Length: 305
Image (cartoon, rainbow, N blue to C red):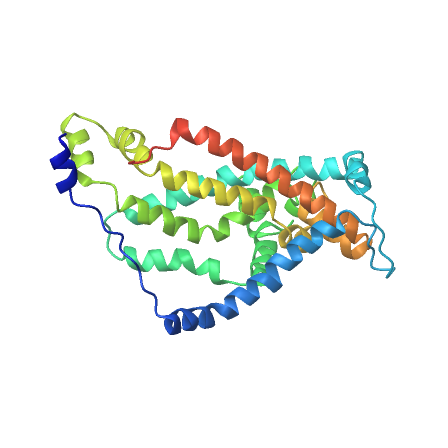
């Protein structure tokens, strides 16, 4: 390039963005309730619990002293903590695949072009709006020792278990109970199914492919990013289970999951510092699982980048 060409080359002008200070101020003003709520109700409790995890805070004493890592050391040597971790992992490994498969199955059914499918979509979402107390009452009628499910099993000569009062069946019972609230997951799957190009299904049909070929070679790869998202959120939600075991089993029968363990330690036993440390260790466990899922994502989740 010659010197003349260099001199005649137009220079890029920097575009300055001018902001209306009044509009910016009004924006912050409208967002201030959310910002204050986030700081006071989420950020402050989060860091305060981190502080408590290094202290001997209890509900019976106003004196709080710094203990360093003593709580964490005690937890790692506590059999009750490891029992809670094992029971929680069992629930997660059973509940997450069960709920995802059931939600995907419902989404495929509701995606089919049948009369009244909009009505059915609304009906399947309604259970997510029902309060947990009503859901607990319903499932006690379904899975109780003399519930509807056991009565149906009795017709075939099968003696059903006392689902929520049995060491073997309490966790499967709670996992089945969780299938009641998959409506939100179904809606997300439905939105991804509508984005799958119909041309791909037509191409498979031309090549002689059947329903299973279409599902495993077209549908599943196309919705894999959404499947990954639902897997991630379902795993995090499963670790947070608390209300169901508290109301259905009272934390007995191998259902003393981490959430229930934290609650009883903090408010029944009164060891808030110890419970805060358990909650942060729970966060570490969930974080490790999320990282593992993220690493595995590259092998089965396909993005159109």
